[in-house]
Amino acid sequence: MTASIIASLTPPELARRWRVAPEKIVVMIRKGVLHGFDVSTPGSRRPRYRVNISEVISYEERRSAAAPVKAVRRKRKKQTENSFVKYF
Image (cartoon, rainbow, N blue to C red):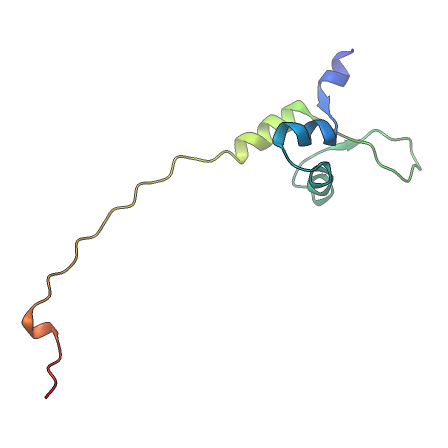
C-alpha cells in the first residue's frame, strides 16, 4: 500500500470508525460538513469519495464533547406569611 491510500478513508471505512451508515458520510460530504474529494474519472456518474485523515481528525476535534458545566443551584426563598394572598 502506498502512503496516498493510507492517508485517506472511503465512506464505508469512515462509517465503521464512527459506527454510522456509509450513506450518512456521503450526505455529510455533499452538504459540505465533511470535506472529501472525488477520485472517479471525469464524466463518471458515480462518485468515489475519499476523506483525508487530517480532515477526519480535525472534524473529530471540532465535534468533541466538552465536560459539562456544573449547574449552580439557587436557594429557595423562604415564604413569609405576607407573601400569600389571603382569601376570605
